[in-house]
Image 1 (cartoon, rainbow, N blue to C red):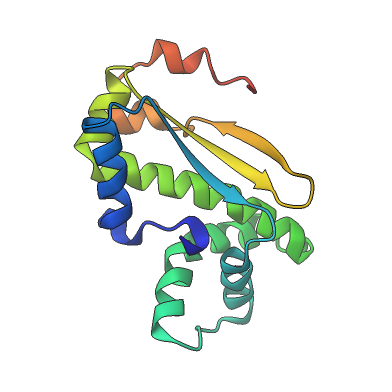
Image 2 (image 1 turned 120 degrees about the vertical axis):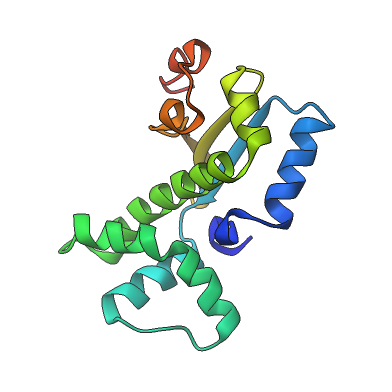
Length: 157
């Protein structure tokens, strides 16, 4: 999906992932963003210019990325656009992961029981490599459980 978004935390994308976990017994979900993302770049530009999008549908996509874009611009106010987009991409991945955990009992229960791993990654389009971000930094708090298996896997893969 454009910008790796989960609108409001509900809908087809989350339902499809829940099906994979509950029915197909998937053990690993990787939320993957990518470099040079047009949707994240548009969100950063919209935040900096304090503007909306030219259509309602584009506005929905950008609005779902806006929090990550605002944080990136706030943390790196004088940085070039490229660095702000890089940070916003990572923040947006963690936001999607958080929505999955907060809005899905299947995700929370799977992670808490250590039957499921949820990790983030950024695919570098130009270099063809993957930067593993690991689990969400607040994963244990969100699912309400101490996760021994996941804690041991926080180092790069």
